[in-house]
Image (cartoon, rainbow, N blue to C red; front, side, top):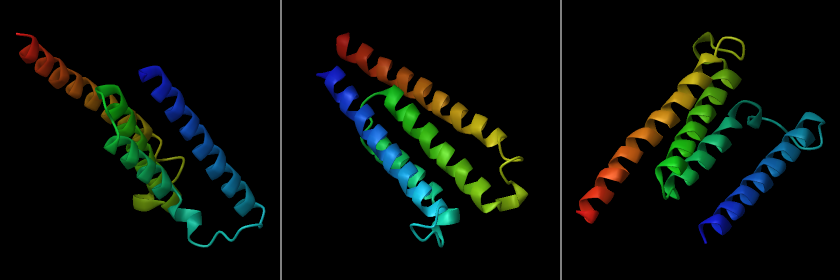
Length: 121
């Protein structure tokens, strides 16, 4: 059952990414208007991360969701050139996002194991 859910989640992410990529391709070629979406598209990544976090059932999925939210935050900063952090100067935020996900996964893993140990004892 767990493997089946993972396959569905992977397929859903694939379809979402294909859809987003197709929309950006159409916008870049003038088929779709690109108004404010030009700088605010990273909010889509943040919202997807929040949705993943809401549906997280284990430390790994929660850590991945936090990484996705962090990457969305980086994309938002870079796309809008906030604090003079454009694409070439903001790349360290990618490391911060990955680190946040890893720390979240490790911390939740410890809490998860402590709860399991209490139930077994």
